[in-house]
Each structure stands twice: as C-alpha cells, then as structure tokens.
Length: 233
Image 1 (cartoon, rainbow, N blue to C red):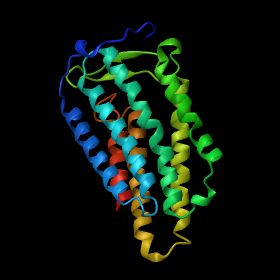
Image 2 (image 1 turned 90 degrees about the vertical axis):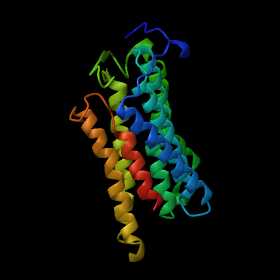
Image 3 (image 1 turned 90 degrees about the horizontal axis):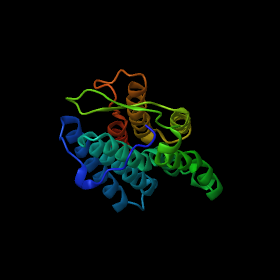
C-alpha cells in the first residue's frame, strides 16, 4: 500500500461494467434532485436537501469512475475523491432534517463546525493514506469480471463509520420525535423520510458485513439517492 504511485489520466484503462453504469445513472438522478430542490430553495429544508444531494452526486460519480477504471492507483484516487461527498452527505442530512422540522434556530456556526469536524479530518486522512494507512491499510484485487478492488479498513475508517451512523441516528430520532408534535397531515412525509434513511444504513451494513451481492462493492451512495427521492417528496 505504501509508496503507491500516482497515475495520470492518459494511463487509465476503462471498463464499463454494469454496476458502473448504474452508478453513473444514480449520479445523474442525484444531480437532478439537487437541481429541483435548489429551484425550490424558498421551501423549508430545500436548500439543505440540494446541498446534500449535490454531495451524493459527487460521491456517486466518483464511485462510478472508481468502478469503471481498471488500474489500482486510479481506483484509489477515485475512492479518495468519493470521500468529499461521502463525508458531507450525512451531516447535511441532519441539517436538512433540522431545517425541515423548523429547528434551524438550534443550529449555530460552532455546532456546524463541530458537526463537520470528524468528516473533514476523515477526508484529510483519506487523501494522505499513502503515508499512514489508517483509512486503508491494504488493497487487493477482487472479482476480475466485476473489476472490483477490495479495501482493507483501518481505525480512521471505522471512526468515520461509527460517527456517520451516530449522526444518522440523531436525524432519524429527530424525525420520530416530530411524529408526536407535528400535524398529522405531514406524518406520512415524516414516515417516508425515516424509511428513506434506512436505505443507506442497510446498504452500508451489507458492505461492512461482506454480504453485498458483489464483494467489495459499496451500494451506500445508491441508497442515499433513494433517500434523496424520499426527502424531495
């Protein structure tokens, strides 16, 4: 892992496997949701949803490029790029929930900085992984037909996973709490949001437990796009 050389764009070989096509399509869908939400940014929560889905679109596009490129250094580069959107999406989801529920007054800049502290450190760790291996201690080739690279997981990776699930749990708890206080007319919307939040959680667990259909392939960004659709509604 250490000493992994960089690779130029002219050295990359591409293979458009089926899951790469799905990820490219999901990236386009996520961007479409972001644009639609931005156009309605005067609606409560819409601006945070637009930012969240923009992060998901970046994450999914990078995942698609990682899935399509063949060389290991290029795959690692696009995985590092994924972390920009990946580490932003869940904190932005929480901010969306607070905005949607009318609790934006509880959000202050110090709290936003604290919310993004772990994600920012994780992004920095991913981009400097070749020097410490705390995010990915090793890489190995997976199914050649699927063009998958298997990533070892270091302590920095697990810290980011625990933190992401913790923030997601707070967002879901806030939504469930709102069921007792909000008007019944929006109860179905809140339930749809809670169900939508389960998709990335389940997809992430499938990846972490190694029970995904294609070993080593993380479907979490696709789950986040499904969540975005529920939130948009």
